Length: 304
Image (cartoon, rainbow, N blue to C red; front, side, top):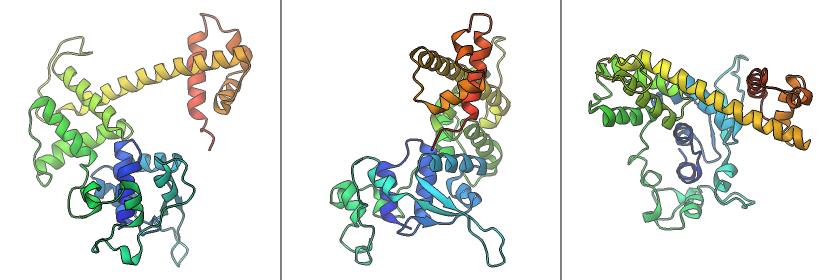
């Protein structure tokens, strides 16, 4: 466990709450260089989320530069869990921006059992222990709520239905699986998952986009298992439509100005037939081209 790195994640970690929690879990397993080697399944258990949620989160963390992975092999040549390196410079410069060197990590004489505060922690929080988050001083104290627990609390606030203890079978059967599935469909974004829960409850109560007005009993998140799938799909479709409009407008501007600084957009325009297709688009085929451009743009990976 590296208290330094956990403190840095608290201070400068990713904005996505699921990604931050996964990164905190990795920091809890990492040595002072940021190295650890847990499996996706292990991380999922520690974070109380599903393995697909961890996979998506890890991919985002890699793409955004928070960590890198290296393949590892056993003595017999078979694959082992990937080695994971948390990018310490990314953490310590996320807020400071212009720092050229990494502040010193925990040294032997800076062990948390002593009075001195480790270098990175002191650098980030400006000194005294009173300014530190509790978990960076005492690992046994507060830890951040896991994403599923956050969603359970949101469900309770909306419905007044108290979630059972996490050791109860009703939690394992009627709460955790559905809330984890909703989180997966929201790509690990807790705020998006909350909106899916809200829309699902509105539908169950005969409101929102429930055009027939039929109501459905709600006793736990499990009651929303089918409704939430449809509501998540509706939100994704709406988001994709908004994204298509945005990409299309950027493409029109780029074509008019003959400025293609966005290589990904340039490649997407080329994929649907080039700038001529954009320039000559009319009302009859604009919507089709807009969707085609959006799909092409999403298929093309952003440059590293």
